[in-house]
Length: 196
Image (cartoon, rainbow, N blue to C red; front, side):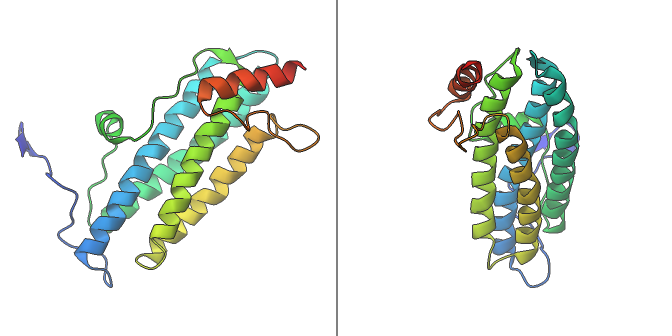
């Protein structure tokens, strides 16, 4: 398809891929990475949104905790996009592609108490980690290089979730957000538990 002077790819099927993989295998891995790229871009934007909209007594702790997470996620984004290109694909990092192709809703918490944002972020991290783990399992035989990349991402993503959960965990080891299924509900429950 042609748009202006530039050709826009109709599909993300590569004309070539790395040695030892078929084009079909490359296309399968590219598709998985495309969704991971969207999720990581969304996470970086969400973390900055929280950074800018967090208020309350834990403001500075959460505000300063998030910038290194954003930097790390941005590095994951770059590595993911470069892996897509290495496999013969064309990474799409535009906001329109992210919004059109994502399979999740936009982050739903605006200006709110730090604990409310942390409760919501716990669910965000759970979703990203779950989907990353599924991509790790799916690339086990077809592409161990991509699998290694995703495992490396998981090391940091799981650590960041632990940082978030440390604010939500009771001395007995339970999470205030355990029963919540939406970001807004997780935020409300986290705030209620913190006030007890």
